[in-house]
Amino acid sequence: MRKGDIIEFGLRWGGIGGNALARNLYIKESPCEFRVEFEGSEVTEVTQYDTVDIVYEGAPSNTTLKVISPSYEYVLKKTVSGSGSESFSADEVGTYYIYLQNEDCYVTKELRVKAAPTPTPTPTPTPTPTPTPTPKCSWFADRMPIKSADIMDLVRGYLGIMDLGW
Image (tube, rainbow, N blue to C red; front, top):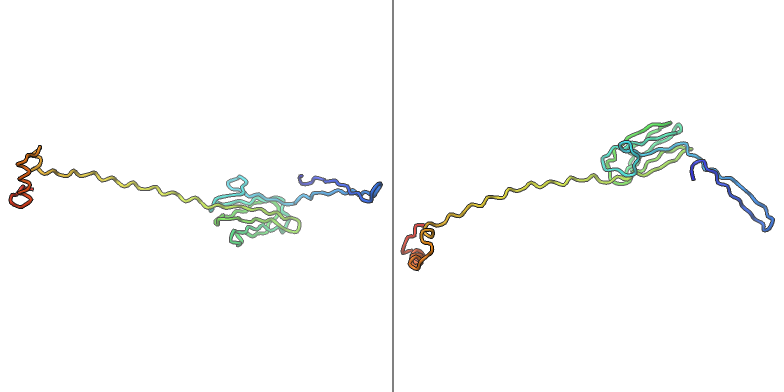
């Protein structure tokens, strides 16, 4: 069904040959409408801190445009008429309620606001230290492969009888 469509229906009562009543039901066209836009496209969800435009059309005089934040505070409350647009920043995460209303017009929409993505910090690579070669004892280097006499010198060095020069 669309605005301005006609619905016809009949109603009968009283059995055979009873009375019939036919009526037409008209769907009344709302005199006003609005859409919620972000960067020129109609949206129902935006990211936190985005600036949102409310574009309204056909608003009778003394029509109120209201935007209520997820914390139930007015972000915008303004009397409008005709066509135009108003902007606000969606700073809170949650659902914003947007109303365009007067005695002839009542349109409401919800705008969901999701949290802004937090940037993932790039870890700073820790430099790998270059291994420092351990100096070899020259005593061992001069005596490879080791002989039994050299082992005895090691024992004497351990006992303090001999200085190995380390």
